[in-house]
Image (tube, rainbow, N blue to C red; front, side, top):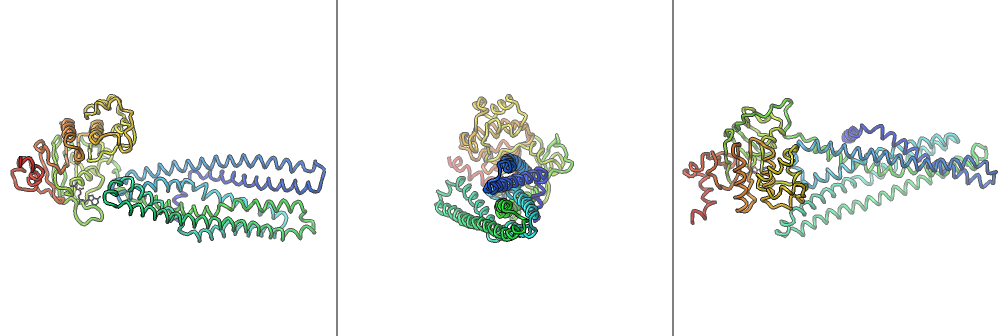
Length: 574
Ligand code: ADP
């Protein structure tokens, strides 16, 4: 119920348009009823061979209702589709606005296929909240009231009877259908979500699935999700058939009951034969708006579920929130980590344990250590993707939680192992970092990043995930981005780890050139060209076990030296 209230709250700005659409929907059905009534009147009256002139009113009625029905239907469709698109746009914006601060910490628990389904299917399901859920009951209610009034003119007994049959068709059948189809819509949605997750895994992990012989099992899981969905869809179709038959049955029942109630009045003269014909057809037509009601209730269930799934994400508290009055990013940016500890939610071991270190402006430091030592966790804390559990990180003497996270991220340029390129042009991928960049800025950044041959291809498409570019070119695009960003602090998190030897050397050279004069933190497990760093922190299981310059660390007999010797075994042997 709470979810429904929240959903209704979201569409509140469109209440006026919804009421108007319902009214016009009623006018459309009303015109349909009017058309049948006037037609019945003409046919019944013509059978008595009266003078033509007495049929004039009926003929005018047929023309009027015939035209009005088309016009009203058009207007109703126009308004209800307009409402639908407005709701869709609002929901999408609302969802993206809410989801952005949650990335990445709070979104980690959701599989990407599941998130995709929420963004596409759940929102699409909610976009129809007016046309499928709220509109039809309103129209049916107005038509029931009209019929009650019309029949009341002739006989109170007939009015009560139609009220009973409409209640059964409008409340009884939908409730029965709902009872029978309990869980069906939700089940179909869950199967669809499962299919999305499996399909994404298939596309992205096809290599691994084939390599480890897991393809048959994966395909079987996809098949089972499809079979489950099909079974529920079949059940759904049977229930839909049932509700249509029941509504038809009720319509015929209503017809018999009303004839039974009105026929005796013919002898008293309260009703004549022509009126009886007209009423009969009106009763039949009045059941039309009741047909979509069971499906409204079903959509209501699906929408409630879709709403719950969306609110589940949106109710997650963002890991980082901007302070009410953020401090400007300082000009002096000494970085200080003090007794910094961090444990990932659900984990029992500390990823970082009591780290204390300082990075002076312009200093170049390296954080090295074996895989899993906690190096990337430091990046995540610096960028405020996560907040530390204990201790603090400060820049220029201020805790980083006092800056707006966006401002902080603008001032720390990050190149990670895997650069994500959007399926857009090179220009759009670059201006992500600095939207106001001119063509000259872009050309200079590309040239400095070693991509001068790209300067004439600014509007060329990068392909899905930047497929049209090599690994080295993708990293160079990331370098061009940070050049545009002009941040005083640079973090290179295994920036060259995925590149082949030759490309790695070239990209490293470019990175060295652009980091001159900036504060640089390089995170790596590969000990290459370590002499260039002012200081090296050696991390093991979240603890700084050694620190110093390359020569000092090599003079010792600790982890650093062991790692270096392991990685340079060929050189040592040679
Ligand atoms: P490194 O970068 O040195 O390879 P990480 O900082 O990625 O190491 O990881 C440090 C530890 O934290 C590892 O034990 C890793 O398994 C764990 N870890 C990393 N990311 C997460 C996460 N999102 N949730 C839970 N544990 C994580």
